[in-house]
Image (cartoon, rainbow, N blue to C red; front, side):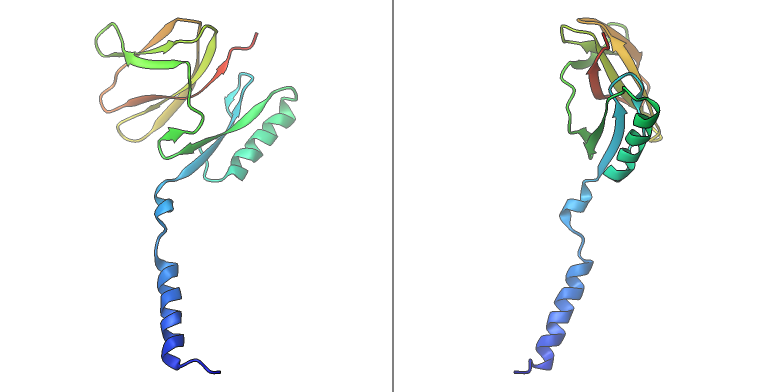
Length: 153
């Protein structure tokens, strides 16, 4: 049985139009980072594919045989592995922020500062149990705790 020409044209138009429609899930980007848990910190920048992060972690594993590493996942602005020991609040001095270690053990925090122009600087800081560290507030910048890990013993 042959389909009418109009039905074929209509089906083709629906498929072609559907392929051009952006999916709503594409608005949230997922990024990946290889991260060394044994002191070397970030092994890659935030990259678009898990494979890119995996390759950076694997390369590190070859050069640092006993190091453990993992892949951190970030969706939008939120890291899926939430830090549990960090508390960010206003510092005791004007124009400062305080990052406090609320856990009963030494923790290494991986912090990022996003400047007003969009540039990001990241660094790892060690904060002993129940201690804190102060940072200067800069207009238009934002400090976030990307990840944390226990201090090596």
